[in-house]
Picture 1 (cartoon, rainbow, N blue to C red):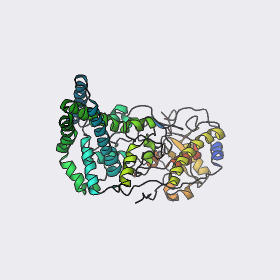
Picture 2: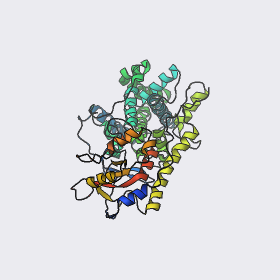
Picture 3: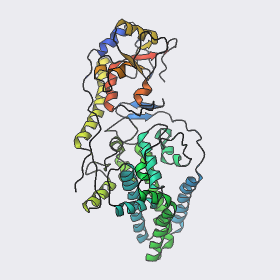
Picture 4: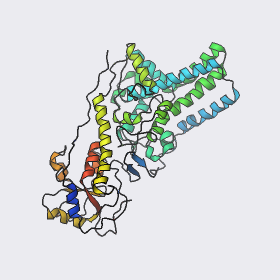
Length: 471
């Protein structure tokens, strides 16, 4: 049975823009002070103002999101996450490590880790592969041995993370800081009014997932503590080593291997497939996370059962799934076609070339030295040329007149958000609409962002303001 590729939802996009966009800007900016400075964030997709887009690097945090107190500390998680390393350290200092116990610990680490990465993550969170009932049951048991919560709880949080990445509704939002994404989010109770919701109807309908969820505590204690301790004790008389090394030390390593996916994978590496979020590809992170380190690719194509798509990428989870497939114990392995992968890479490269192109053609960076226009001046510009469509997004003004007819959402979608020459109220900044932050949950593609940069006219300053609020 061979893997099959799903139909990709990626749009092709447009490859051209009106040649007179810059000329229009220059004519309308005549007499203005073009040396006016101030940094304008090009981060169309960030909900808050403390993240900035760096060409070639993607979104980078320039200040931490404020963290409110939340509904209070989660004492159960605090107890587990702090007691395990303390007791494990005591065991390491007082117990001799036998080689057979070390082998057992490594085997338990690999099995429990696969229960999370191959099971909780790639099978149950993303449905990127499937397996017969007995295999799924074993994987759920391995996941319970990792002591990271039930599959239902883990997968719900992870689906919400993908749905609301880098926003306040992301359960482990890295924009609140490295430590928060790594472990801090588990130390406080989740606020149901704040955390994003995700559809888990398929998990609710799965009796195995429900069984593991209902009996998680007993299963976790049995499989993570009792079984490894008894194997070492009955096998070669090392009960103490089995408990401290094959249980607690192994749990500690599996915990932080997984936690690095939420923290380090959003900090370190390169962004070859998308720079609209904080996920990065890194071989270093892959080594620390059982192959989950090619995170930029994963966030762009979460339905792919692979993280490392090349043969030389370190992805033991992928290798484990492929082995099960060869043995007839896995099927419906979903992967993205090479053409779609190439398109994603080209779109990112095109966006970065567009940044360089605008700098070369116009002699300035798009984020700096933009001509500032007041609301009255923008209305005069529209009146001077009937039919002209100007739109304000995140403090920047764009002339989208020539693009409106080919906008995928239709001409009227553009028109409804443009500046009216006769309106009495303040000009509305529709940046939140473009970012999908108005509950439409629509996020524009990489190409849409790079295409929009070609239509920039200047910066918008509210009437009566001393200067543009561009911080």
